[in-house]
Image (cartoon, rainbow over all chains, first blue to last red; front, side):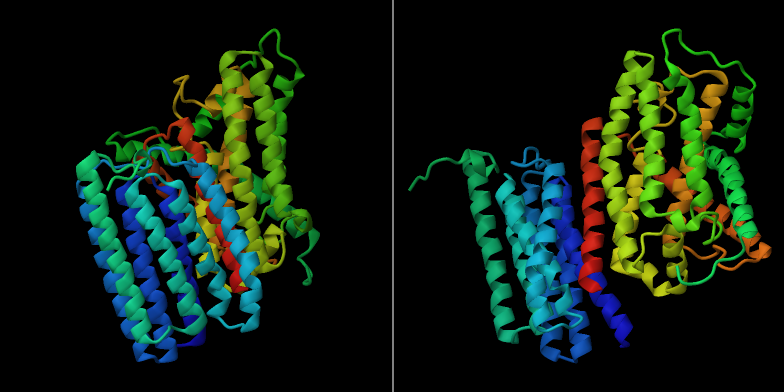
Amino acid sequence: MSTSFYVGALELTTGAVLVCAVMTLWRRQVRAIVTMLRFQGIALAFVAGVLAWHERDLGLAITAALVLGVKGALVPWLLRRVIRLDPKSRETAPLINVPASLVSAAFLIVVSYVVSSKLTALAPSTASRLVPIGVATVLVGYFMLVTRRRSVSQIVGLLLVDNGIALVTFLLTAGVPLIVELGATLDVLLVVVVLQVHVLNAGARHGSFDLDKMRELHD
Amino acid sequence: MTHVGPPLGYAIIASIIQVALVGLGGPLLMGLMAKVRARAEGRVGAPIHQPLRDLRKLMGKEGLRAHHSSAVLAVAPLVVLGSTTLAVAISPLVTTHPFLSASADLFVIVYLLLMGSVTMALAGLDTGTAFGGMGSSRAITIGALAEPALLVAVIALSIQARTSNLPAIVADTIAHPVWTSTPTRLLALVALVIVVIAETGRLPVDNPNTHLELTMIHEAMTLEYAGSDLGLVTLGAAMRLGLLFALLVNLFVPWGVATGSSILGLLAAVVFLALKTSLLAVVVSLIEVHSAKLRLFRVPELLAGGFVLAVLAVVTQLATR
C-alpha cells in the first residue's frame, strides 16, 4: 500500500468516526441514532483494518474483524431489539436542544484539539496526529450521555465514549495486545446486554423509557 | 501571489465575460431548476428561458413605489445588483486571474453578499407592511446562522491552501488534485451545500415558488416591488444563485477554470462552468423534489449542523496538516 493512500484512507475513516458521532447528536429518531452508531462501528473497524495493513499486524487484523462483528453488527442489533418495543421512539426533549448541542459539539471538538496537541507532539506520526479526533469522539459521547433522556440514546452515548477510547488506542499504540482488546470488546458487549435487560425491565414495569421519570429506588 | 498574472486587458475581458455569464446564466439556472422540478412531477413546465422572458417583461414596465416609502426602497435593488455584480466580477469563475483578483478575498466576497442581504432586509422593512417585516426578520435570522458556517467552511479550504484569496485557493486546488478527496474537503463540501441552499432560499429552507404568508421568506421581502424594480431585485437574486453555485463547483471541482492567458482557455472555461453549474442545479432540484420544507424552528438545527461540519473540516485540516 502506498504511503499517500495509507494517509488518505486513515484520515477518511477516522474523520468518518467523528462525523458519525456528531450525526448522533443531530438526528432525533432513536432508530437513526442507532444506525449512525453502526456506521461508526464499521468506520472504527476500517481504521483498525487500515492500520493492520500498514503495520502488517495479524493481531490487529483480527481485532478489526472483532470490532466489525461486535460494534458494527451485534451491538446495533441488540439495540434495535430494544427499539422494536417502542418503535416511534424519538429524542423529543433533550436537556439541551439540538442546535445548542451541535454548537457545544463544535466547542468540544476545538477543546479536544487544543488539549491533545501536546500529546501528539510527543511522538508525531500520521496516526498520532489524528488523536484529537478520537478525544473529540469521547467528549461528544459524554455530552450525549449527560444531555439525552431516552435510555437508548444514553447507551449510545456510552458506546460513543467506548468507540472514542478504542480509536485513541488504535491511533497511539497501533492496537494493544489482542487479549486485552478481546477483554475490552467483550466487556462492552456485556454492558450492552446488561443495559438492555435493565431497559426492557424498566419498560415493562413503568411503561416508559424515559430515565428522568424514575426518581426513587425500590428494593 | 508569487507568479505574474496575465495582462490587465485579459483580466478585464475575463471579468466582463463572468458578469455576462452570470447575468444570463443565473436566470437560466433558475429556469432549469423549475424545469427539472416540473418534469419530475410529471408536468411539462415552462421553457428554461422563461425567467429571462419574465425579466424582459418586468424591465419594460413602470416601477411603482408605495407613497410612504423612503429612498431605501428605491436604492435597494441597485445596491443588491451592484454588490452582486462586483462579487461576480472579481470571483474565480472562468479564470483564476479576474480583474482585481488580488482583492477577491474570502471575507470580501462574503461581505459583498451580506451587503446585498442586509439591503434587501432593510427594503422589506421600509414600507412598514407586516409581511415585509416578517420576511426581513426571517431572512436575517437564517442569514445570521448561515454566514458563520459559510466563513468557517471556506476557512477550512484556505488553511489547506494557506491563503484566503479565493482565486488563489482555486488555482492551488488545480495544482494539487489530491486535495479534492481529503476529509476536510468532503466535510466543507457538505457544510457549503447546506449554506448555499439556505442562502439562495431553496427548499428545504425556503420555497421560491410560494406566496403563502406563513412560509415565504425572500418573496415576503420583495412583495412591495413592482415593474422594473422587481426586475432588478429578481435579477440580483438570480445572479446571487449563479455566483454561489459557480463558487461551490469551482472550489471543489476546479477543473476547466482557465489558469493561463489564452482566449481559447476562457471559452472552454465558460463551457465547463455552464456544464458544472447545470449539473449542480439538476442535483439540487432533484433533492428539492424529494424534500418537504422544514418548519422554521427546525432550520437552525440544519444550519447548526452545517456549522459543526464546517468546524470539523477546520479541525481535521489542522490535525492532519
